[in-house]
Image (cartoon, rainbow, N blue to C red; front, side, top):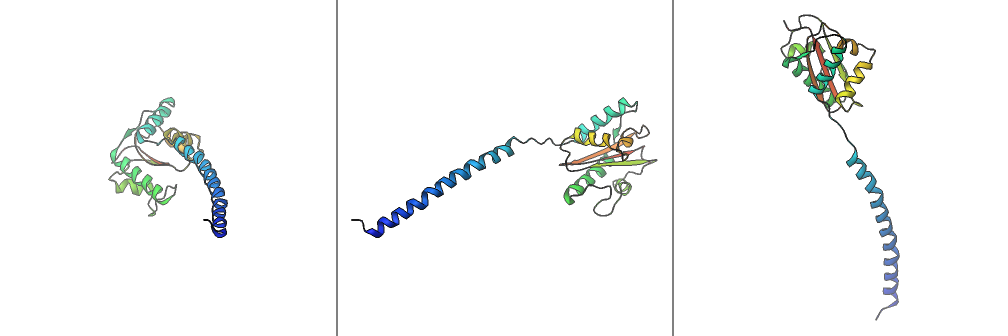
Length: 171
């Protein structure tokens, strides 16, 4: 036998549960597009080899010899790309205050002539995006790429960050 109180409790339970189920279903429906959006988002990671191929293609168009990779320059470039990614900065000066020349020398490379550095950060999600940005730059990035006196390079990448070092040769 049901009492008046049990009927009231049951009615309240039903009255409270139905809206919660409706809201729960709506929340699930709203969450699905966000989840599928993250699944369909494609991020291409840049790679030193791809960047080198793109840079050398630009140099070839300008009549320059292709750059060759020096492992010491590559180590210095990778260290700086890692530093920029870890500290959220896009700069020629490292988080420790180091310059590109100091990083080259720390890696055992002493340029026997001019050297240069290109850096790139967030907003560039592919090798092509980094190179296109440098080629469109009016700050000397394009000039470094198309400087035919440079013969050696080192490239480092980390997520959306890329660093390319240029040098004539090591002493």
